[in-house]
Length: 292
Length: 335
Image 1 (tube, each protein chain N blue to C red):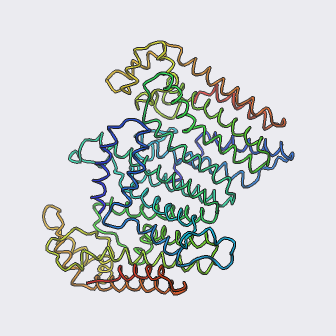
Image 2 (spheres, rainbow over the protein chains, first blue to last red):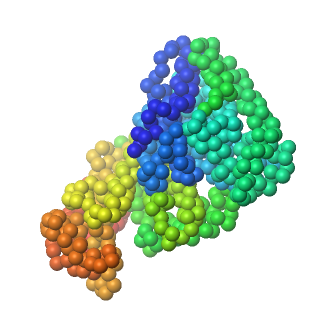
Image 3 (cartoon, rainbow over the protein chains, first blue to last red):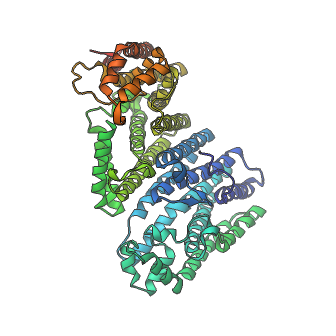
């Protein structure tokens, strides 16, 4: 049951970044391309934490499909799904402890705490428009970017003793992570269900106002009421979707994601040039242009 | 106990619904869970207490003198945090145990929406507690302890998973498990956390591997006999005018099946079931009492109690050690 999502059909986006970052840092530090075993473990742990959070998220949101398959909670029921998530998390912590570095443990437990806090942030919303946007970005950071940022930081700590490099790795991961999620929210509006592996407009159905909605709200103030009632009235979801597609919410969100990617590129450019560094820069492009 | 607990949980959830703001939820959660842990007749803080007592009983390690001044009343601050972590993990899994399968609900269970929300809150608050436990664990700065406690979480999940897979198979009345399987499962779901926490407390004070093992053995056997003791309650109470339902997978029932043979046991259950699939627990209880299940469960409980006491022998005599021994006497005493 725990193997269910580890079928190699996910994008493995996070471990890829982590391994690339590990190599880029190693080259920066002592020109070695070898990835240390401990750095590889961090990549594995990052994907495990991510999967555990997916399993719990699906129970929380009562989702039906993920990565083109039925969700665990649909097949085995909620109780077992939650336990499976806990089990993956405990396996991740055992692997984490085996690395044997207390700094790495603190950095990666920060992720777990952020994930839970992000989920709590998602429960609430703010009345004021500006606060609402800040709230959305904070939630995005905690739920998505924290994992990438902190695992990048962890491999940089293992690869190179210079705190400046740790900060670069962290900033890169953070900005790419936020951009990644912004595009994810855009795809929720522009892509169709088959392509995405999960149903479209899922966020609206959950009552969540994501980036495109918040931008659209500036053009169509009548959406405010819908956001506050979390799209709960019949027809709300369809109307909101129409408003968003009419407005430039999608373009604005994409633009914002571009700015974050730009920030990420700027951070990573401070490292010594290497093919891996170039790959990380190209990856920011891929984040922006992906369609699934 | 579980049903009562679930009820209390849902009444608190109702309280939470009214406060749709994440800060308030945070604000509520902390004292709310602290209340949960301490406010109980069932002494839910048993695990934390045992960790503190065993830390005190072991005292400072001779290997490391420089360390000693950081002790407060014979316990290191790291051991105090460990006791808290143990309680946090235990509570987190009490919350996660309470999750219901939405698909299996019937309309008489109340509105589906409320149950979904209850699930959502249960997952989140359990995760919140676990995340806090992980953070405190990381702050202990000891990778061996992190590994021990993480593996205890893994064991706990496996134990609860077995529990669940049993209760879901409704057409099968009881599991065909022998007492050694029962012991393995109870070790995972009840003993592993306490045993490994006790061991970790010794590791934090840099005690030898032998002392660590003794602490592990105490935690393991004490919680085994604790579990046997509570399984035995429906069978040993004097004034059993009203019979409470008991699990057909509790120790006396499993042992009863071993003596009787599976077929005869199934036949007894079918007789007790009678019409309308309502189990006559009184009749079943009588059947088990008539057999050797109860007495051999008591023997097993005392056996584990003695093993726990034997492990304690390795610690120097102290008030804390006496208290740990008293816990064992309490869970091996029967009317």
